[in-house]
Length: 195
Image (cartoon, rainbow, N blue to C red; front, side):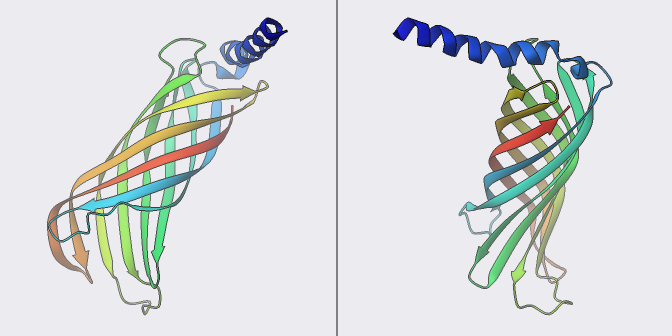
């Protein structure tokens, strides 16, 4: 009985990969969009920064087109947050992204992108005119993901991404307090994509 279960399991796992390879919407020029939720950790790197990586929830949305059946390109935007008693940190991201399936029909894909990262932190009870801590810098994104098609138009999956930023200046109430600051944001997420 065990070999029959293994054959059924292998057949079930092979079906989604075949469906992805044969999907009529995964042709060049077809549109896609996705939403994701993740557990993420962010860390600022500078002489005056706390070296702890704070963990919190993250969300992201993206939209784009298929450059080829194996390459998705688009734009993305997202946010991460962490609250420690009366202090909140937030990271905003935006940029262009590419997702490349190295082998046709494979569910595994590589992620790359360029964009912007913005960091904001301050007291939750602060007055509206108080700026708190600010940081803005260019962003490089690298990652890996796995698609699991759900029919011809939908897929779910998981992904791990690293957003790395550097060369930014950290300010407190508009006054620079550290130069050449780095920020990293690591996400472990799930997503839903429509193609």
